Length: 82
Image (cartoon, rainbow, N blue to C red; front, side, top):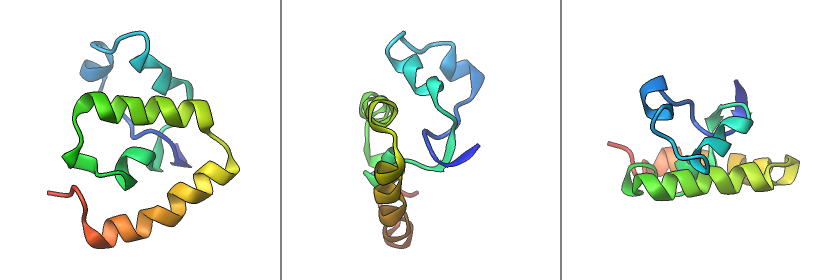
């Protein structure tokens, strides 16, 4: 597991992924991710998968740094948290 990357999924969900959604499995799962800092539970499943696919395409040190910078404010504000 890494610090930044798509959140880990349970096997039953992975079994139902489309080929495009499965691209999120090409990188290590992380403790924080683009989905978490973009609204979490307020987002539909398809948007969550799109964000993870975007992360796979753009992954890099600067992109990860941007996600890390947005993580603490997202956690403090509890955006999308139940």
